[in-house]
Amino acid sequence: MDSQARAIAKPDPCAACRLLHRKCSPDCMLAPYFPTDHPEKFGVVHKVFGASNVIKMLQMVEESRREDAVKSMVYEAQARLKSPVYGSTSAIFYLQKCVEDLEDHLRETRAQLLDAREQRDQLLSVLTDTYHGSQFYHTNDPVFDDASAMRTDTNMIHVQSAGENPMNYYQMI
Image (cartoon, rainbow, N blue to C red; front, side):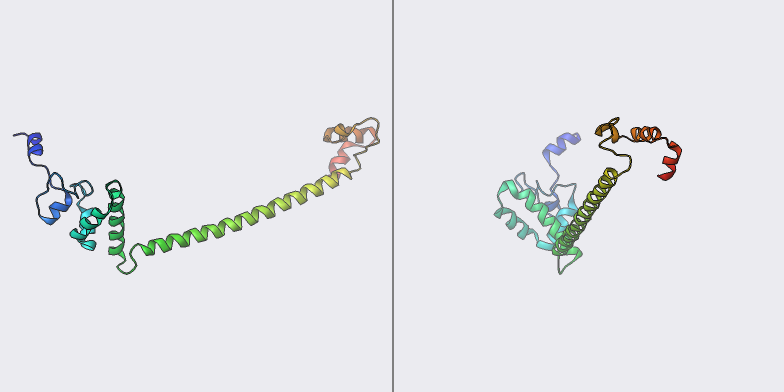
């Protein structure tokens, strides 16, 4: 008999039935959730809750949600073995603390952002006031209109037309 025929004739028991040393039936309730290749999952759950309690808990849950229930049991059992007193609540408290810390950091970052925006607005206001009060900006100058007075190279030409050396202009800046 080849291996395929043997597998059809006698399937491997699920991890739960193997650990409990019993024959695994085709309609075994635990087989879909505790496959043969992951025996540690049922071992941990069995150690903490016991096999009969696992079966009772799974029977109370509707079939579409049983996989999530098994994942929760495995997680709680692992946490309970690591921390017998607090179990998974220690992880929950830790995560809540992380969320609080991140919220505090977010508030601080938002405050810094508002401060930076206020500083930027103040600097823009100062720069705008300084530029409009500049000696090179003349609204009554017939040679230059407002748009050309805003350009730096036009201001330099204006200085040259006033008979000044443009190099002195760069030394003033």
